[in-house]
Image (cartoon, rainbow, N blue to C red; front, side, top):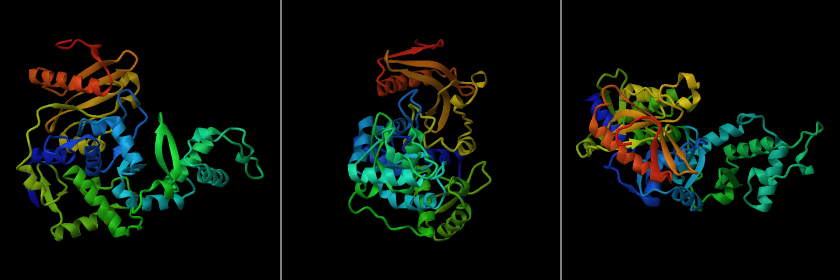
Amino acid sequence: MHPISLKDARALAVHSQGLNSSLSFTGKEGALQALEQIGYAQIDTLSVVNRAHHHVLWSRVKGYQPHHLHELVVEKNAFEYWAHAAAYLPMRDYRFTIPRQEEVKASDGMWHHRNPGLIRYALDRIRAEGPLMSRDFAKGDGRLYFGNNKEGWSASAISHSLFQLFMEGELMVVGRKGFQKIYDLTERALPPGVDLRHPSREEYIRHLIERDIRAHGVLKATEIGYLIKNSSADISRLLTQMAEAGELLPLAVEGQSAPYYAFPSALEALETLSRERRIRILSPFDNLIIQRKRLEELFGFPYTLECYVPKEKRKVGYFSLPLLRGTDFVGQADLKAERKTKVLWIKNLVWEDGKAEQEHLWKGLAQSLKAFAAFNHCERIDSEIPLPGF
């Protein structure tokens, strides 16, 4: 195994995530490039600040605007499906969602039992009428009652059926109104020429390995495809084969016991990486930090999104955002964008040990907060705690 310092391993991880200036993404085209680089951008319903999928891309793409992602979907360059969770993915990777679609089809239902009657009805209406949302299915329509038990209509039942069809690959999300999904038949939503070949098991596992190492720079076997059921043995086997063939480079990372893997070109990239000084305010669902165990082992940064923690047990705040400077996590800021008054509130700020007195960090954070406020359509920054300059 090739030895590598912890500092260099972190630098490769941050670089591969597009979180330094060595990878330059700009505008809508850059948003697609960033999506292809990191693999996906997670969708989340929380809107304390701009939603996670926009925040993740804004952190990487110069001049990013939320309408860029919408346009990528309309232009059929990106689509919604399941990655780590619900996410936007690049269309080039569509064929690698087919194994998950077939897995869902073979099950009794995604989180809820399948309702064959509602599923047939939803498909028939969308086929006849075009794209529809769940609220387009009117309560009281007699056709929504099926079977001897007169199973009745409910908003949740039709939503579950639409989601089931989405996960099975029968429907795709072609847009949104507010946060409401608009569904259409997959055969109409896919772009011409998209690759629909079912990947073999070998192709699928290779895709997971290459996608994840491209996105994260250095990874252990357990960190690749870590939510894919029954994949660990196949991933370990193919990693060994790819390393023996020279396609991957096994790394002994300083202070880590298990081997990491990288592309052989990674070491060359280290020589050209720029030293990043600005502070980046990351989403709690950012791809760099979504694997919390990896985050603590590689970056020494234990992080908990405390909106899921009882208020009396929170150490930072409801929606604490990690602060990344270069390859170091220097603190967390609990922020809230108040849309009506156009104020970005600093509800709390916690620096990592020994960093609170570093004046350059305060200056760097102030600059980043101004950009973050503008991204959230806020015209003013205010603080609930005493801070230098406020």
